[in-house]
Image 1 (cartoon, rainbow, N blue to C red):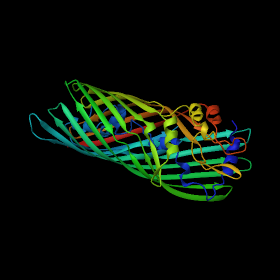
Image 2 (cartoon, rainbow, N blue to C red):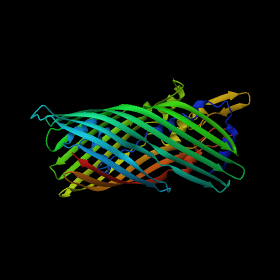
Image 3 (cartoon, rainbow, N blue to C red):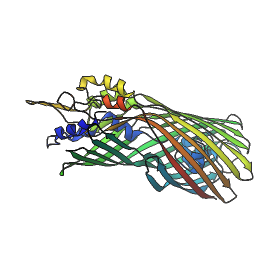
Image 4 (cartoon, helix red, strand yellow):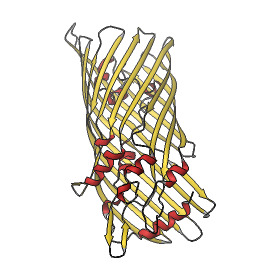
Length: 445
């Protein structure tokens, strides 16, 4: 792998004052910031693989179907702690879910029987990438590290009609924090590129549930696109010389469509099946209140629809003790690296399809100066147990995430700073795993 030339490409950019502020807004970056981990929530929700959109009764499920909070009969307050680790040695501890749910009985025998109000906090994504590549031929190393995450605070209202029809609406206020550090070293060059992005956004969630029998409940849900306003800053240290810049931009994530099935065997067991889809060709980015046509074209050329399937079950063992298991899978939201690069060949061979400028000395690249991750299949395997009494409950869950990605690295081409797909194909598919150990406790009232 001729990764040693990566540093030469960085030097050639020089990051002069003429670099366009929009340099880092590209299809792969928007995609990375828009993805979510579908099983994160309370420990009960996570233990069932997040397949609780039709089962309902837990506030975490309202992100899949806002009507789900009306399907329960109890009010509660809950808190979830999450110990996170991955195969690269990263480790963190945080509150990943918190909820306050009020179930209001209208004391009607029919018609509008009850309603529910909820305020929730939920972790939607953990950035957990860490890559280290050593090229012995050129005596060079490249280390690429990402961390941060996305969170949402939801305000929801839902209603129950005849214990048969349920509806719900929710407003979500989202928060994004993303940090990336890319370090390249060889015998002659030391380059350190750091980026920090903070953003806020909002979305709306609407859901419907229908229960034709005591055994079956079906649902549909729609989540509007999230519009993020992001402030980003970066620093580039090239052989001890530092360059700084910052700029704002917007990201428009795709809409989410979902459908749910819930099977309820009395008080003995629950089985949930959730499906959702997001068409990532509908993403777009905006800089200085202007949409970028080339960026939209690149997104439509290389992105595609992601399908997510979640399956989970819980079984009552004895008394208030339940055991749970779940599985979720997300398909690739983008073309294979080689195919994507071929789609973008008209942009000087650059796999990211960003911005170019021409002057009297030739073509100079003004695009991103660090590597990108092209996501492929993601799988989530979960298990857990919990105990619920008359007043209090406690739940534990474990999630194992298995992801496949392609790392796409920069390379000079024929004396210029063009980018080609060589490295993504030479490195092949990279697999990594991460773990979530989740503990929830709360009170019914």
